[in-house]
Length: 269
Ligand SMILES: [Zn+2]
Ligand SMILES: [Zn+2]
Image (tube, rainbow, N blue to C red; front, side):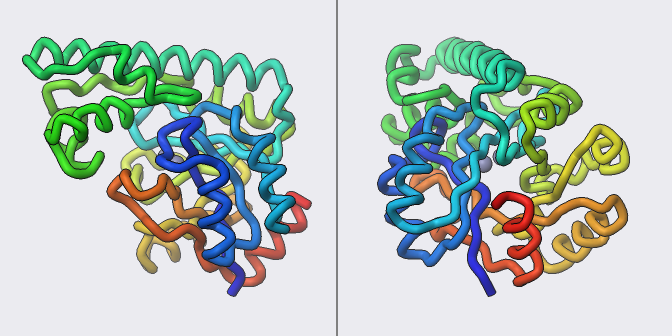
């Protein structure tokens, strides 16, 4: 089965690797079609496209957009016009809200007597800042081994430094990706089952579902494939690769059935 990866992160958001390292790793893993989908940031796309050419990999413009509904309710946009003013505006707004959220998080940590400085966090981010960068600073202080440990102890819902999500609404997100000529997919739906509203999202123009995702087991994939069929949505796959510090998947790429690959190819190329 072909290996694709339409979900990856670089240092322009909260990934631990540069674009060069990302492509080196993806090439070694045999990924044929890929997309860079940094959080609310498209600064890496040009560099990524050049690298993809070098490695003879199919490349799709991508971005992962956060929403205000849930910490993990994210949508990925593909093949949009990266100059589209509405899209640039939404990304700029989301990046500003991310920064505000990060600053609030740092303040809560400081109020709880945890030593952390704003400038220290902000200098890690190459593009947009993220709570993951706060986690990285706490890792340096040995308050946890992986980012996921830090989120469990300090930053996650119910913890001392939890700040609710601040971002665009789902409707704004879908509308804007479509307005920029892109295709909109829901990212890792298995992580946000309590938010599912495919009927509404499809009526707003959702194009597809990220079915093949590391934490989606067979039952979840089957359920999502049924939903895709019901609402006539596309199917994609991605690893959400962040490099080796996120406490998540370490190997990029997802195997997808040939017909899924062919359909995506026909849409994007
Ligand atoms: Zn995500
Ligand atoms: Zn992601």
